[in-house]
Image (tube, rainbow, N blue to C red):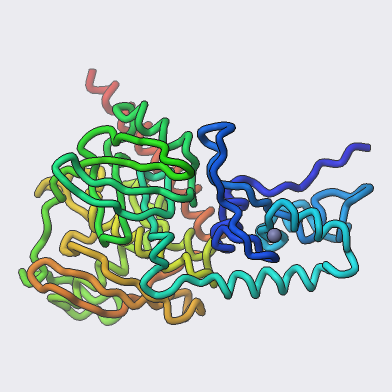
Length: 379
Ligand SMILES: [Zn+2]
């Protein structure tokens, strides 16, 4: 009988590497290095090792027949190691028990938390379109545009970056963007970026389009408080809009199926990791810098239309209170300048996300069908 191995998928491997800071959890050596074999072989020389083996059989270590295939291929059953340590832990099952490996991973992930201002050498997160997130830093900006150096990929790989350049005109316009945590803003690209391989890194040169129009926060913004039903104005109304935009999960609103925020998904993937606040910050930069697809009456607009820069995002605790997560944020606000405050954002459970997306898809398809039918009736 041949058994299928319950291997990790690519996303789980990337998450493990990221959470480990790209260092081996045991010997602490870097698992990122140059490779001249293939242009896309830069990033990973580390191994997403199984704590309990992926399949039974000779040589399988710490195999647990009581685990389901989902549990075996879940990120909780993984540990990021260099190639030699991954061999070592499989030679000595007595010394490297399940509990020892779990503790090793916890200690390592806790020890590789980045400092508050980010690690200078590593830089911060850069997103290029919706499929690529990398750790990188800004080299400079001049008449030819801005230049960033990407050192590791968090989402996507170098082939996605090259595909984005070569198929730039075929990408959805709202996906041709760059977001930079180091600067606190981003924007739509003016044209295909120029990508160069530099040793083990990639350098990307690009120009941004004019920023989407900003809304002056000191101008009247009036809304109704969702809790009390009383009228609120000014920053209170803006805060409620921020919370709403962040709490509306992407794909759950049938009228705008491509809009929404990824914060709930990020929460479940990166909860308890120092990367969550960086990815949450990137999401807020996207919501402030990248206009939504549907044009509104006043031209292109972003959900965070008054935010010029996202300067800081802190997560005081990952505990949810009544399904809400508290975030401390610092923004640069049009008309107001630096502003700091707290946002309380609704986090959908994975089940709610799946259900909401399935029903939004059905509604969306029904509406498209009805629209197509009424167009046919008119002919
Ligand atoms: Zn090692």
